Length: 287
Image (tube, rainbow, N blue to C red):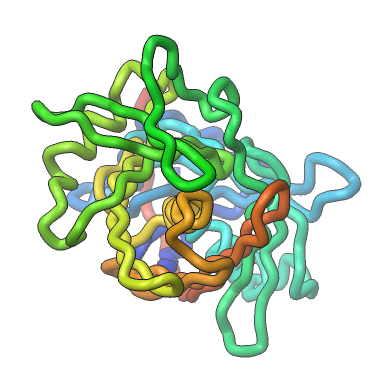
């Protein structure tokens, strides 16, 4: 089967975007995994699919598959590319759209400077909704919040747990460049305290308005940027009393601006969304 695709990137987090507004392609988990493979397929951190609106109050459905082929709830950098794609492809004339994801409804908006701002919704802190199993653990109170001790690679790390439609575990580090991302990332991702696995964030606070961040993404490994990871890191930093309401997040792929007013207010993420190329590829039959 030959399919058309668009390759896009947002702050170095790269995607293959598929248009299913006219009909489902019916891809298998193995085919999503093949598309994401950088040696045999197109290569991407995630595969993003555009589908028709599932409800009258939304404009599109946004489906995300990680590089391992698993469907996931949310992808912030992908949301910006999604908005850019549907606008550039003439699928909508709106600058602001409402999009249904597995993790809830989000609202991306194209800005005059060419970037995209996404209303990512309010962060989730209830442990059973993240989900995180904190039974038998004693949290460490920090500021107006707490961190949780989680064993990883022979050490116990303190992580702030939060969901941005997908689960995140954020730890503070002195220097992101020397942080044990490759050692601890996978161990935290697969820790049994996180029944649906988790994205592991490594956050370095520079000052109250600037941070550096690396993220080991669930099902993808370390990526150049993670939009929901940036949102989760800033939310954690604010609740821990370390950051102001508007923060620039320096990732290895670029800068994302995150804003959060606290409590149940939504998190806003602003950053780039760029089309790299378009093409067609013959997709093998894989089960």
